Amino acid sequence: MADPTPVIDDLRAESEELDLLVAELSPEGWALATPAAGWTVAHQIAHLAWTDHSSLLAVTDRDAFSRELEKALAQPGDFVDNGAEEWAARPPEQLLADWRTGRDALAEALRAAPPGARFPWYGPPMSTASMATARLMETWAHGLDVADALGVSRTPTDRLSHIARLGVRTRDFAFGVNGLTPPFEEFRVELTAPSGELWIYGPEDADGRVTGPALDFCLLVTQRAHRDDLALRAEGEDADRWLDIAQAFAGPSGGGRPPKGGAA
Image (cartoon, rainbow, N blue to C red; front, top):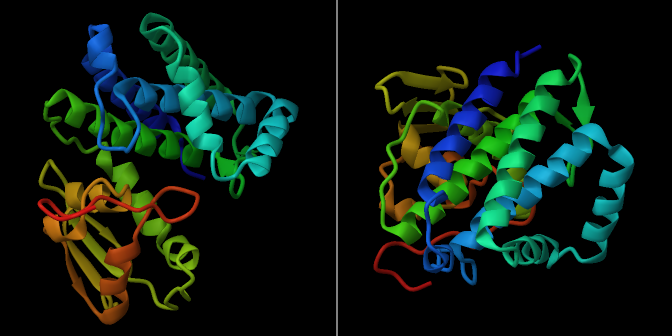
C-alpha cells in the first residue's frame, strides 16, 4: 500500500507556490481572463477551493458529499461551472482565505485517514493517495492558467511525477471516454523529469511507446497544450492515437487547447 505522505506534501507545496502568485493581486488582477473560456483568475482559484471543499466532504462527511453528488447528477453539464461561478463571486480576500482554510483542512483529513481508506467521488471511489494526486494535478493545471493570465512562467519541478503517473494510469479511461476500445497491451512510457531523471512505466518490450519530456506529457494529459506544440514521440498506432485523446482528469473529454497560431 503506497504511503500517501509524499503526494500530500507535494500538494501542499504546489498550492503554496500558486498562492504566491495570487496573494497580492489587485481586484483587477483577480478579474483577468485566463485561457479557460469565461474563467477569470478568480474562477480558477474558486474552482480549486470548491473542489477542495467537495473532497473534504468526501473524506469526512459522506452524507453531505452524497447530497453534493445528487446535485451534480441533476445538472451534469453545469455543475462544475456553477460551483466556480458561485465561489468566484466572493470578495477576493474572502475567496483567498476560504481556499487556504479548505486546502489545509483537506490535507489534515487526508493525513489522518486510516490505511486502506477509500472515499466516494464523482467517478470511482478514490484512495487517500489518489485523492491527493487528483488535487495536485488540478492545482498544477489551474495554476498554469493563472500564470498565463498574469504573464509569468512557472519553473517545473519533479512534483510532476505524480501527474505523469496519473496520466499513464488513466490511459484506458481516455480511450473509453472517447468511445474507443482500450488497447490490450501496456505501453512503454519514458519521460525525462525536470531534474533530468528518467521516469519509466510499462514493459521494456512493449510495441507501443511514448517518449519525451515529463513536462510536455503532463501538459498533454491535463490538456494545457496541444500535441503539435509538444516534444512527445509515439511509436505504434495505438500509442499515437493515445496522444490525441489523453486526459488525466475525470469527466467527459475536454476540448483541449488549439495549437499555437491555430484556430480554436
